[in-house]
Amino acid sequence: MIPTGFRTSCVPPLALAWTFRRRPGLLACLLLCAALLLGVRAEAGQDTAVQGTAGQGAAVPALQIVAFGDLRGELLPCGCSPEGQLGGLPRRETYWNGLLKRIPSGGDPPVLVDLGNNFPAPSAQGALKLDAIQGFLGKMPVAAILPGPNELQMGFAALAPGLPYTVTNNDVPGAFAPSQSVVRNGQRVLVLGYLSPSLVYQGSQDRFRLVPLDLALLSRYESLARQAPQRTLLLFRGDDRELDIFARSGLFAAIVAGNPSGDELTAVSERRAGGAAIPQVPTKGMGAVVLTLGAAPFARVDQLTDKFPDGPEALAALKIYDGRVKALFFEQLAGREARAQDSPYSGAAACQDCHAPEYAIWQASSHPQALRGLDKVGKQFDPECLECHVAGFNRAGFVSAGSTPHLAGVQCESCHGPGRAHVADSVTAKMAAVGTGTSQPGEATCRTCHRGAHSPTFAFSAYWPRILHGARTAGR
Image (cartoon, rainbow, N blue to C red; front, side, top):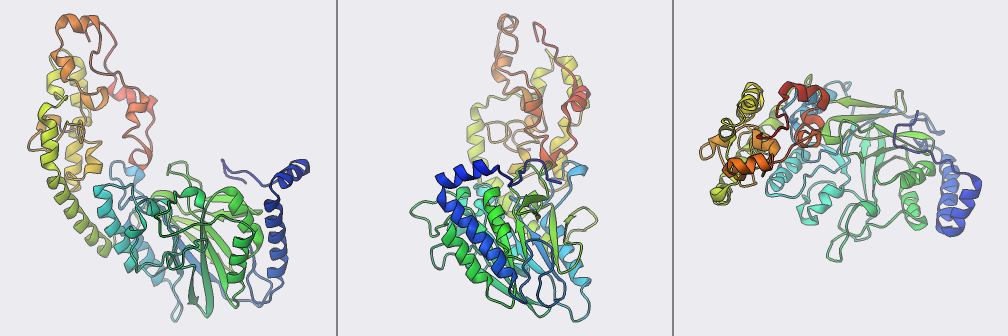
């Protein structure tokens, strides 16, 4: 079964011939893959399966690999919707500790790897998240981390030097480790990484240089993978063509991929390449991929649901993070107050006289209580949360609960836009131009906040009737 959005590598012969004539390097690369596939499988003791099939050498004990990644700055589940409560660093701690408790006496722990893309978008608050994320990774026994585009857009200097960031297709010595090696249950495991240069902007000032997948680069992976006796694992982030070449090479006991989807509700847990299923880590850190080499089942995805209570160490670290976020909130308070001196927002109370029925519907909904929801979970100072829980935060609207209480909660202007100019219009102007200064929102407006794990069951057709209001008639 091929997941939606992925294509097979089957191409008509004439199309292949045309492609090879236009791109002779691709033919050479694929021919090398075929040679490697035959050569590596002939070596005794090397597990040569692309995915999940035992090698032809002597039998070796089953070996477990646990892969995380694609956190994308989500330190905790959002908290806004019960259905979206998946993932978070504290649950990851509990999950990992649970795996360790199930290890037989004298056994080794699984090989723990990370597919990167853990960093948030660059911002002042994002910089605080870097410390929390990398501090957590530093306390976990991670064998290798493949940095993703999110890491590198923060700049090379943002990467903690003590973490095992691993990129094999980097050509600048010392920037990243080309490989990592660990021993589990008497078996040596070699971990290699591939980050496609198509995913990363590279400037002349960067301290790394990613090279694309070609014949010479594949030979580099082949040379490392032949360092027997060992099993070789590839951490991959790239496109389907690149993945297919790696999967067909026969060099790896397993490949695990980063998730290209930014939507956690539609992301798939595997990709088809080289005639096999390549597992992908869940996006937004919502789960873990568990690979079992040498035993069935080969791969599974464990979701980090609320059955995993918050781990105390990670939770304590995130409380420190929350304190730093609160300090940042007050550091930026003066600037927000200055911008709000001539605020275009008036507050819901100003709408009440002319829009009494709509105001009553709004007041009876849960929208006015949105800021109180943040108070309950200690996030009332978190700028990322305030964006959707008050009116006009960071847009010259809501400043703080103390100075702008009239803009607390999700209000009329959260959806219709700033209304001060509309309130100031004369009655004649209002009659002549309905909605002067404001907009008539639709589903897209709702989805700016009701999105992804924040509101996974959102359906406009079901939600809108709950707050149905605002007939478009003259005078409104």
